[in-house]
Image 1 (cartoon, rainbow, N blue to C red):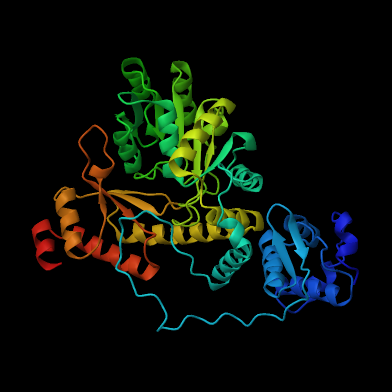
Image 2 (cartoon, one colour; image 1 turned 90 degrees about the horizontal axis):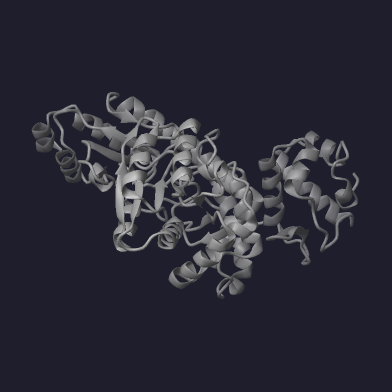
Length: 481
């Protein structure tokens, strides 16, 4: 077999020299890739320091999907054959290849974490349960830890060049081409939103938002002394006429919106409505803050507002809702270069920097494809949970989307949101009532259910309990729960 080294410069030649041996192997293809690397090392066709081809290029040359090649590289790395250097590529290790590590033992019942009660109040993606993917995630963390001392130091605010490039690559998959000089890496969406609000408005100013909006926006606005004006909505999101009227009468400094899988209603604003809202903002000179927390979840959603009006929109794309709530990394795209310095100064003063360790892990996962694999798993599990939520809960009050992991439920006429929440609280089940989201108008009799906070079995059981509760008169249900 010809060596991989001899073909690094000719990756686009077909067929690749590994094509036949890998595809004829009786092992899983990702193991065959790791075996081929080991064979080339034993035969002297690869030597320490050699750079391996990029995973996507190798996938194309071998007629494989990217995930298979990424797993092959991960397996070779687990065996101690290769190492990945963020921003540089994948290289044959300088040290002698270590023997393959023993398979990870399955966690014992004794060491397993304690079972949690179902909690539908915290909006976070379902946790990854696939052991192969979990192992891949752990490998990434272990590899990042090789540079632990460096990652415990202060780093440049806004992310290193490789972090910004990884962010730009991630947003490009969302349909948002981003110049890296207008992208800042922040310590989560909340931090980025705080900075943008401070840069656009001062105490006493008005900002507009959906009539039902993200509670964090309301909290930050109150902290900064801003007035939030809620705009009327229909099934497609904010009504352009309501925004137009607010622009004429209230002169807002900004419009905040969460246009894809909106929290709490799960509304995704269609393309024509997005264009109409942007036209109103452009006509009145109002900045737009796009909180795209859930934008990565739909496979084929409409383009971000920032892609339609890059000169107008402050875009915030966080990873917490796509990959894991503890991954406090967000990419902030600024419409003008001069704003970059202004926001950098504010965010540096308030948050210093994003955690280098967390950021290095996020960058690695994006570069090596682990982030895509996690996102696919979150999408699949969210769709499964939405499916049984729709089948279990009363159909009349449902509003949801297959890709979302939260669910908006309007209550039957006999139930008030307060009595419903109190009844479920007596059963030790947390939900969020509409009061948390309502801006100006009286809150509707509705609640948000978050389906990602516990495992699938607990989620199904809690949904069945909710459905049973709603099938009973409030007084009866409260007596027997």
